[in-house]
Length: 209
Image (cartoon, rainbow, N blue to C red):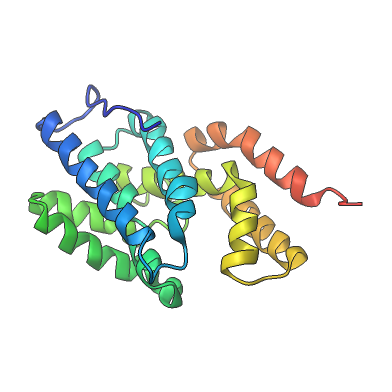
């Protein structure tokens, strides 16, 4: 279930109904791209990652002072380039930032929102340290890492079925990813992530026999 947009902590006033309408349009757009014939990621990726990132953004934004009119559109679009063309996944953050700017401009977002949301997408692949980015960049990048830790079954499926790794290599890839991100998390994200991280790493390190 997608949380209702709570703007009570937002620093910048704006039209709540307008934002909810735009977020609905963005969800439909991302679903359409995920379900398209060219996407290697499919609707599983939308349900198991994009919406999970959105949920963690809702939890982190009030703790970090992040503007929802910036970070929620960025959360929905942060992997849009990889969804469209998985062959360029290594550069999906940079390509996604360009796509995000174009999409948000077409939807009527203001220039400052477009620039800030695009920067969030560009910087989302590793948790941004607290004093080295905007609250929105910190929020999205940490929410993305949290979503990876919270859903090991999906990411093991992704490693094996999408990336084409054998299970032991896929497990090692996933374990390396989450253990790399764990010490980089913002303290607020780390607190939310801890049970997920322990569960995920424990499962991956368990002897399957």
